[in-house]
Image (cartoon, rainbow, N blue to C red; front, side):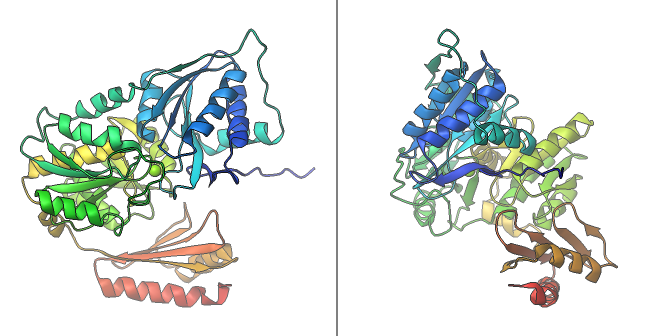
Length: 458
Ligand code: MG
């Protein structure tokens, strides 16, 4: 009998997502919660959180029903950022967590993310196990005298605020003005408060929960942050910070209101901790700009590369720390940064506080800190193809005289440039990145690759 390789069916790299009422329904949430409750077993306790989407309460009720029906107890934390739920799962020593969020997706979407007892997202193998319980209808509900209980702790998010504030010197924000745009998402009650507690004067827009997201989409795009930029300029803020719907990511504008690229942000945030930790290590996926490695080097830190996806970054960080390495920070170029001395997940509130710390310590406008960074030019392209694997094989052959890293697609180093050719995990397309300090070299490498892969495109 041929062994069938099982793959995730409903869960992507960031949980299960879908359109409310179509593929994301209370019935689905109930089924997933029953499967999770079955996996954990009776008597275990699970924390639940949600972002402010209109479908949150219905999915929350379904998740509570599924877990308690399987004999698990539930602590419902209400609306809070994903990293706040992750912090509380760890802090309260819970056996797991369920976050109801579609992160940066438009308002009609919602999703379910499963959190392990250690506060990290559930990995691939256990997710497949959970899905199989759901798909095969193997969930086991408890008897009438073994059902779980549900309690609510709507104020527990304050412990997450305390945890972040405790990472920085008291009053570090005194005299500094910051503008915050939580985008009517989960950070409304957290990021403005974190920055105020650190001593800042905080100005906000879109700071009331609203599941319709009437003012901007949950994805903090440059276009969507125009009002934040205006607020920064009107108030003389040192910077502006915005979040996606569940606030695991933070996107910034500088004191001039200019939108900051995620790689540049990561390099700046990394420099704050690298400066305190010479000889340490930065962990990031192979798709991240070389600016992070270059900035780390300035402070005597090395950079270690992983497969693309925050969960792989987080797990690599834990592994390296267990091996005795001094990991100072991890993250991606999309605004998701992980602080190992705080917790092992992306944390937008912690990023906001770190940018404040940097601003306070350097006493230099953010735009000048950016201007002082080494300059890199990166190109990012994607092409439709059903032959992505052949493309990777061909490019490995084509660049056979260059150093290659093939942990996720292939990353080639040639002269002062690098390139990443990476098949998408979910769509029939291949992504091509090239980067160099010399813009022409990066462009030339891009053209070479696009030329070589042209026969394989569909
Ligand atoms: Mg998110």
